[in-house]
Image 1 (tube, rainbow, N blue to C red):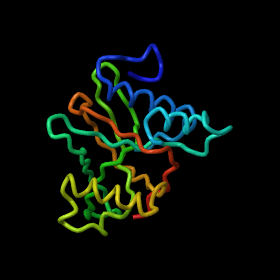
Image 2: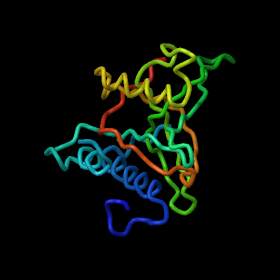
Image 3: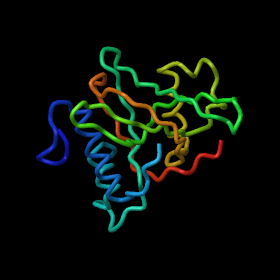
Image 4: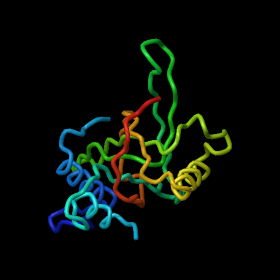
Length: 174
């Protein structure tokens, strides 16, 4: 299912994420911190549609098996050196690593807008997905921020992957 003929082929979500990871590492090998479609995004990232690519990341959203809803990743980050923490949620991720044997992946949560700007009603799975797509539709596209928050997921739990157009996320400031 991947773009390469020798791609690992027992799970199409795993295959696509392996392809994305390989392409991201080619254009930005030092970046290992925690009409749209996947092939178009891969071409944008690798400079296939332009002479060179200014992008480092293909944000992805995963669709859960059974529910057909977007997966909401959650992570915790310290607010400083003390015991205080903030919880972050997102449906957009940067692929950090994929184990082709187990089909487990390390994903970094990407933020399109600060979580503090969302309401409790918007923090449901469908609400968070709609909120992200609303912000992207209102001109926030390309304004992803790396959070440095990584989670590990079993890619066998997903039935679909939605690739967003390639971007270069900004640094986390929260």
